Image (cartoon, rainbow, N blue to C red; front, side):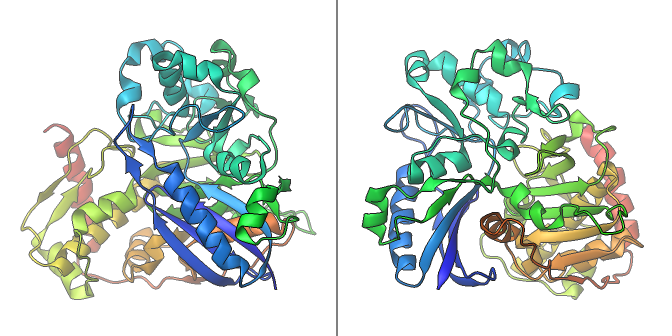
Length: 462
């Protein structure tokens, strides 16, 4: 059977999936995405991932004829390479090191109006990362032949062809102008244009798997390695507007992609009114079109509130928290989101059991998503993708708060994998199987939301 392999590297975990010609998963393997504190700065353990990838590809090659490999990764990450490999380790974007000299970089950053890229903490602005590396390690930086965004780094290791791609450049990097569809002034100010390889569409086949890797894994030498894509944009692919025979305008939709980050993308919403201070940004989809987005670190915050031993709650435990007026106030992660910099706190009677902690984490992420939907101004259906589709209460609670705005959730937990498969079958548009969530009617839920929002004002002054 001919099959596609999607390499999906998230911030927390990496996943390799083997998919048949219809997009059905035949096999899937996971690996933790480890950050190493040894060496010059916190960095991704790329060699551990590489060894796991090759071992997994050998296993998959016994099950199917692999014809394409598609890299999909998190954003805010890039590799500096010469003709042989990395000249520096791949910096972890959660490292605070790039903020060592904020004033110097601030003087170089293009305005938010040009890039749609908020001024973010740690290394979440890729331009800040690269500038810091160039200042701290000038000899190594000068050795680099290419700056490769993370999906294209893995493609380069697999096939040897260097490429750029717009979804990663358009992901709060300070390096791209979404409305102009070109690099920002920062690229030429710092003299980096010669390090940026030619831009290629995410679905482009860059070339065949390296011969030595084909021999090592047992994959045919004709297997093509695709350019790849930023993970949130992979989830958007099946919702991008398509021309209709009658020329009617596409219906707007807001896609809520959930994982380590919860990213809300309002397809069809204009960029005017985005607020830099609330982590609202202009991402760029695979077609090069700007997309109004807002985000918070939903998966990370859920884990912080729910604890290590997560136990799914019942509706009764959700109701108990509402009646007790127990509120979780942002934020419970160190990076990003509309309330970045605040210290999270729980007010009211504290949850006592694992199920109650799960309930509080659920309510918190629902209230944050609802807040972001209002702030972003996305209209039309809300479609939930990713890990929160496993939570039986998240979508029903959000539906109860959104009123007449329908909330749906997909029947798979990985829109990124589906998007990767779509790139290898460009032009084929799989049906986005989703179901409308029935609202979960809990007594006092809307009043609970209003109390939470009122507390946000008080909490800001603490």
